[in-house]
Image (cartoon, rainbow, N blue to C red; front, side):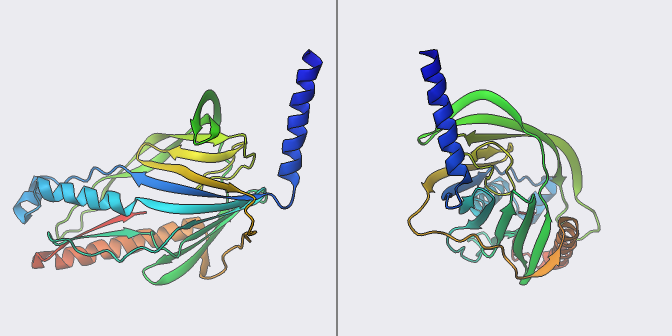
Length: 282
């Protein structure tokens, strides 16, 4: 009986290995994202008409901006992550609030090559296309034994801790005051399934012994809602090629510069009292 059980395990392992090594193996996974928002303005905001009700509306609008749907196309070596559908241009509400999210364009395409440990991210920032090419960080996950089901797939828990910059506050006044930024340790929790043995995942997440179906970093949640394995219509995973080539460090410098320019422009126009614009890094 013991030898029979071992034979079954070996057979399953060989079957999985055959599928993984097969050149035709691929799939599509649909993910939905959401983010907690807690945008607050100090007592000075009250003198400019920003009350508790307006702050609540800001948070609701920001949360809506981050409720999105993405499709991850993957095989054993590569993946392509792109938003599904088109986004309507942000419109001011009845209160005059307008929400803008930098780095959140519908043209954004993230290509990962897990075999070569590199990625290419095509992204539009204020009408200019960038092609960010860099290495995938081989961050180690701590594999746990806790399990749960996501849809029909049994998933295992994995965690890792990273240091993340967090903007605690920034001034809406016409001043040179810089945003207050702190660093804090954040635990990222991922759930992956061994039933789909590829080391792909949504966004920049990867490196586990199975497809990542859910990720939470304390504020953002990404969860898989649909999976199609080996679809009838074969999908070609094509690395994006359009845009000015930069590495990740250079791109982040450009983002910081653009954010500062937009903040200063907003402060310069703040006296008109017509609207409030919120800009956050996506």
